[in-house]
Image (cartoon, rainbow, N blue to C red; front, side, top):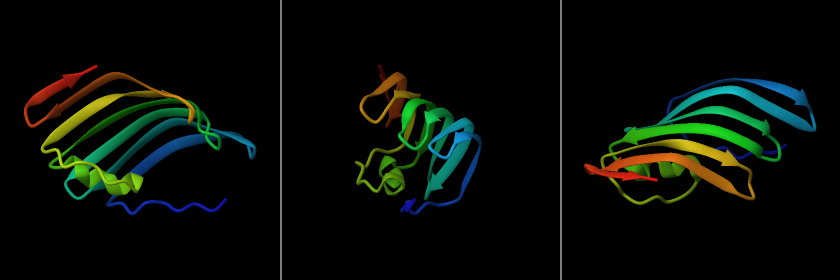
Length: 112
C-alpha cells in the first residue's frame, strides 16, 4: 500500500488493530494532531479501515484559525478565528453522518 500522508505538526496516536490483512479494524483510537496554533483530536473506531466502512469517530478541534487544519486534509479551508468544534462522524466513504455537531466561531455558536 502506497500512502501519501499530509504534513503535520506534532501528533500522538494510539489504538489497536485487529482482523486480517484484507479487513483491518481500528479500535480504541485516541489521536491528537497540531497544526501551528490549532489542534484536532479524534477518538473512536473504524471497523473496516482499508475500505473506510463502519466509521464511528468523535472529534474535537480548536485553535486560532480554522484554516490551519487544511494541511491535515490537503485542502484549503476558510479563515475562521478563533474556533472550537466537536461532534461525531459515522458511516462510510459513501455517506458520512455528522451528529452532535457544535462549533463556536468568533463568539458565535453553531449547533446541529
